[in-house]
Length: 253
View 1 (cartoon, helix red, strand yellow):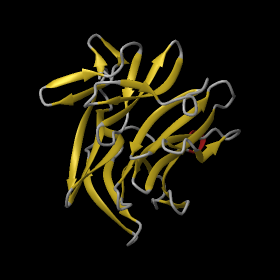
View 2 (cartoon, rainbow, N blue to C red; view 1 turned 180 degrees about the vertical axis):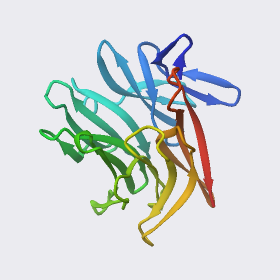
View 3 (cartoon, rainbow, N blue to C red; view 1 turned 30 degrees about the horizontal axis):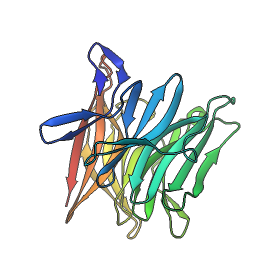
View 4 (spheres, rainbow, N blue to C red; view 1 turned 120 degrees about the vertical axis):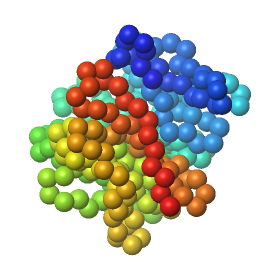
């Protein structure tokens, strides 16, 4: 949530019932994707970004540890059981080096899922980890391309979500069954963006919602809610000068 009068400064909150708790005690922060009682979040202080966690029941906060947090920029955490997915960016290289990392909080082992360094510059954005699956987006700005990839943790197999020419995929989440939910749009903000799903088991895609001209979305998260999935995402109006993003959801039956 951005601060009143300071739209570029963000704080992270968790709402339970009618009350909201601020997760970051100092600096700025961005909430990650929770697992059960625990919420991971990114904190930014003194030019450095690290991952911390918050327990809703205990009201306690703690660092993700030295295996996760380094002198580099750790960002966009997602938690599922013992798995913590996050990005690490070395901002001291040119172009910047991106790594997508998966941390096992039980064994304290760190797995490199994806990495890019050198030219052409390519950005690797964490999506969501959910059970045995995770998703991420890889963008190449010089080519105006973005693609969503699903990765299965147990088999280490990857699958790239198909997309038509001159379209890009981003803002992805994944269900515990491995169904990928994502935004499909164009490089320009608000160019016929839509929420879609893709089921690799049947190789079928589905249009769920058209956002409307001038609107776009990002930061997807799938909440497995019984017989139906709920895909939560952040939506913005591209022409807005406030920089405001609001949270919406699509219920899929």
